[in-house]
Image (cartoon, rainbow, N blue to C red; front, side, top):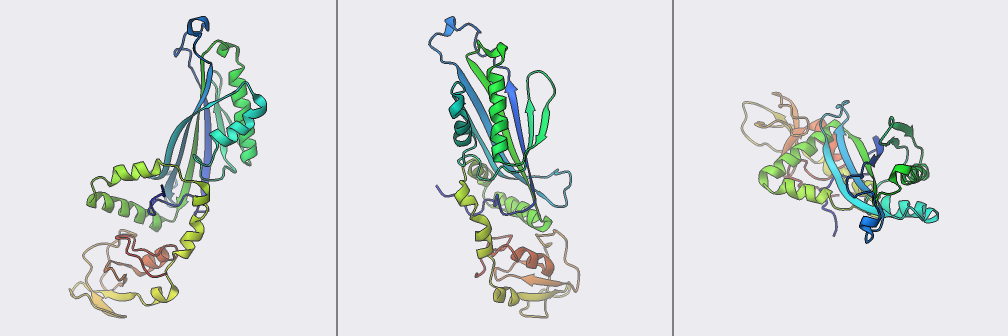
Length: 295
């Protein structure tokens, strides 16, 4: 099932940070420690995995307001007793592209054991990440206190934080709120959509797709430019015409000043000239109603 076209692009922005947290879980209360009481059970080693991508504005240094783009959870069972195949298992089952549709280079790694302080490292590439997971899993499995446990578990969380231009981020928030206003079920549908897998071959095409979706230069040059006039209720047409503005620009959320230039799209929505031109460098739709301009 194809992902909706309105989902945020996961790999189309240059500024981002990656964090991987792995944590040993106390499972001693799940089963009694005696194998004889649970002869029908096979010992399991499981890795619950949570993968998420969140976006924030370039002006939000503390990342206080996030816009979610991906939120997937899964539980993977692995065979730790076959170390020669464990590395391949970690790559295919745990770090597979069905759950992680972006490269795992340059991530910040933190491991948490039941006892002791967290250990933090900066990893260079995916091979190094796989090795760290391999070492952590083997270490937990070989602990004396875990020998008689029927269930051994470590949780892993992979988080990607993506920085986007402020006007783009604001337009996303405004668009999301408008969609929820029009469709009461949109929030639930959106959460469901970002909870589905998005494959790497699909994601890697986003940057090219964004470039292809930019409106033609001639279309931008022919957009209706108007002068905002508080005394004129007419809509105007063409360069130098005037109009009134009862709503703020939905990109920067600032009111129009009297005598200020605005740019109106064919759908009728008006924006500050600089705001909409920056937006149209990477998009071919109205940020408010998603009207599509020719490409």
